[in-house]
Length: 571
Image 1 (cartoon, rainbow, N blue to C red):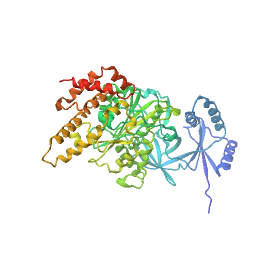
Image 2 (cartoon, helix red, strand yellow; image 1 turned 120 degrees about the vertical axis):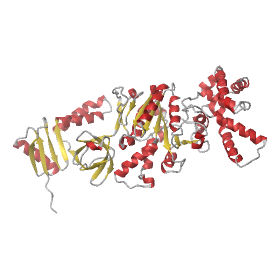
Image 3 (cartoon, rainbow, N blue to C red; image 1 turned 90 degrees about the vertical axis):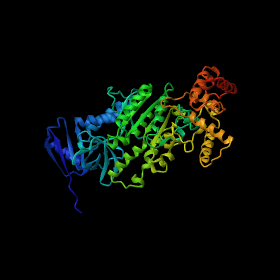
Image 4 (tube, helix red, strand yellow; image 1 turned 60 degrees about the vertical axis):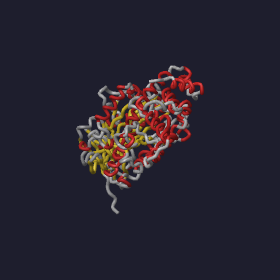
């Protein structure tokens, strides 16, 4: 076997003399087996020199030194590390530390580049192309790597050089991001100027361990009676919102954000693959209700590359973790993970990965599990912060057995299922009580709401069962008619206008009134006016307000007071 001779090329504006050349060659021969070196003039290198050999480069220009020093400095945990880093950088400059690898673009297209030469590149590492485009390694092969581009692939050409940055994808984070609209890389897109970052976090990070968590037992109220009474959400929970398109999934999420006003909860809304006009309408709604004062919107529209749609939810999660680890409570909405999985499927197919069920790659489950597991209620030793996740998944014709819905259902702590028939019958929010569930249950309810709701869900389930049975019966006795009338009024009570969240006071009063038969003599079209009147009077009772505000169970005295108000209320 003939050993291949390796040659090196030195590029500089000021070429070395013969003695310097022999010293450099001796170093290269000892460390890399270089046989010979050619010196070439390069007018673009004003200070220092470069040595290129076998897809590697020693970049000892001024620009190369400053770039390495800046990258190293960014990794410093605090200012105390700066002096040792600077000293190490100077030592490295004086003694050849390690060569940098140079890659070459083999093929490029549709936001994917196949690169040769970067043998030491790591999964998830950021690569820099010669024209300034950045990309992330997503596929490691024997002799080449697959990279997704964060910019237009038309700016990258076959034969372009690529270098490693040694960093993983990350996003700037900080307090000043609150109230702003940014893209998946943390750049502001709301026209309000630059954002000063406090820190920089990788978009991918390990989920908190079991010992770093505590039980989910503090309610995160949505303001939606159907959800707070029967499918309560706790701080640190992952509750899926699932249903067909255009039946109110996003409205539930937006109403939950609006209801966090004054509750010291930071909200993050991640829009994935939506129309830019839809995102603009959502931002306008949040501004109208004053919710942008505590909300960050991360937008990766349908017009953005699939790479940005893929990275958007992870970027939002990293921003949420910044606040969570500072002891704050965070609510994050992923709207929606169906489009996120489609973007990842496109990237995987372009990378040449084998398709599986519904053409999704084999790691599609891990795509969402590693994202949603980062939602948690941290232990007091870790600061006690929390991040509550509300992922949204779209179904086709109500099919919850499809691949992505079943995956996300198995990851989350419950789901709120919206039904098309209920929506078009006027029952909004169109929550299917039979298929919806919260695996946290009453642990995430305040004592007053927990006591007030009682057998609410059971009675609604019995009504739905009886109503379905009576469709096939011509004769209905008085008792059955009375039960159907009672159930119908319960369902009418759950109808709620969008962007009109109910306070805990009102929810407790409404539940107490309707579950104690006080709607029997109220006409259907007067139910909401009657309940509003009772709520206004009950909220003036200090005892009732005190018990609810201080998370106490509703006393019999307060319950009797509410029922007395209902008896004395007339329309």
